[in-house]
Amino acid sequence: MHQANLRINEAVQSRLGLPDSKVFNNIQKYGNTTAATIPMAFHEARLAGKAGPGTVVGFVALGSGLNWGAALYRC
Image (cartoon, rainbow, N blue to C red; front, side):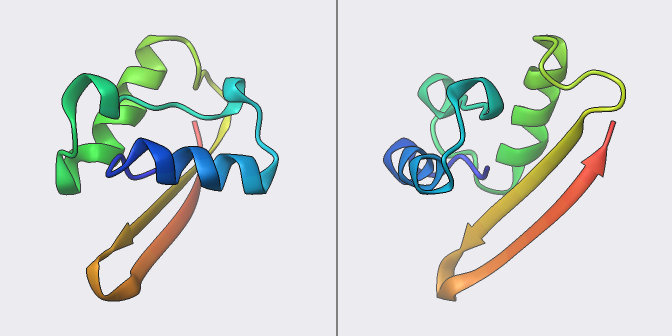
Protein backbone atom coordinates (compact mmCIF):
# COMPACT_ATOMS: atom_id res chain seq x y z
CA MET A 1 0.00 0.00 0.00
CA HIS A 2 0.94 3.63 -0.36
CA GLN A 3 2.96 4.50 2.74
CA ALA A 4 1.31 7.75 3.81
CA ASN A 5 0.01 6.80 7.26
CA LEU A 6 0.67 3.58 9.20
CA ARG A 7 -2.64 3.77 11.10
CA ILE A 8 -4.59 3.96 7.83
CA ASN A 9 -2.63 1.03 6.38
CA GLU A 10 -3.23 -1.02 9.52
CA ALA A 11 -6.96 -0.20 9.45
CA VAL A 12 -7.24 -1.26 5.80
CA GLN A 13 -5.27 -4.42 6.53
CA SER A 14 -7.59 -5.23 9.43
CA ARG A 15 -10.77 -4.60 7.43
CA LEU A 16 -9.50 -6.83 4.62
CA GLY A 17 -8.51 -9.53 7.11
CA LEU A 18 -4.91 -9.65 5.87
CA PRO A 19 -2.25 -11.14 8.15
CA ASP A 20 0.97 -9.21 8.81
CA SER A 21 2.84 -11.66 6.57
CA LYS A 22 0.84 -10.41 3.56
CA VAL A 23 1.40 -6.66 4.09
CA PHE A 24 4.69 -4.77 3.85
CA ASN A 25 5.15 -1.44 5.61
CA ASN A 26 8.22 0.79 5.59
CA ILE A 27 6.71 4.17 6.56
CA GLN A 28 8.27 3.83 10.01
CA LYS A 29 11.68 3.88 8.29
CA TYR A 30 11.22 6.72 5.75
CA GLY A 31 7.98 8.56 6.50
CA ASN A 32 5.67 9.57 3.65
CA THR A 33 7.78 9.66 0.50
CA THR A 34 4.74 10.53 -1.69
CA ALA A 35 4.88 8.98 -5.17
CA ALA A 36 7.96 6.90 -4.34
CA THR A 37 6.32 4.92 -1.54
CA ILE A 38 5.03 2.01 -3.63
CA PRO A 39 8.19 1.33 -5.66
CA MET A 40 10.35 1.73 -2.53
CA ALA A 41 8.19 -0.69 -0.52
CA PHE A 42 8.09 -3.18 -3.41
CA HIS A 43 11.88 -3.07 -3.77
CA GLU A 44 12.38 -3.65 -0.05
CA ALA A 45 9.81 -6.46 0.02
CA ARG A 46 11.65 -8.20 -2.83
CA LEU A 47 14.99 -7.81 -1.04
CA ALA A 48 13.40 -9.28 2.10
CA GLY A 49 12.19 -12.32 0.12
CA LYS A 50 8.52 -11.41 0.51
CA ALA A 51 7.79 -11.10 -3.23
CA GLY A 52 9.57 -13.93 -4.99
CA PRO A 53 8.94 -15.34 -8.47
CA GLY A 54 5.28 -16.16 -9.08
CA THR A 55 4.03 -14.04 -6.17
CA VAL A 56 0.97 -11.92 -6.93
CA VAL A 57 1.41 -8.42 -5.52
CA GLY A 58 -1.38 -5.87 -5.07
CA PHE A 59 -0.41 -2.22 -5.35
CA VAL A 60 -2.91 0.23 -3.83
CA ALA A 61 -2.69 4.01 -3.51
CA LEU A 62 -4.94 6.84 -2.38
CA GLY A 63 -4.27 10.48 -3.13
CA SER A 64 -5.75 13.87 -2.38
CA GLY A 65 -9.19 14.55 -3.79
CA LEU A 66 -10.07 10.90 -3.20
CA ASN A 67 -8.12 9.75 -6.24
CA TRP A 68 -7.14 6.13 -5.97
CA GLY A 69 -5.65 3.34 -7.99
CA ALA A 70 -4.82 -0.33 -7.69
CA ALA A 71 -3.02 -2.94 -9.77
CA LEU A 72 -2.08 -6.61 -9.50
CA TYR A 73 1.36 -7.76 -10.62
CA ARG A 74 2.80 -11.27 -10.83
CA CYS A 75 6.54 -11.28 -10.05
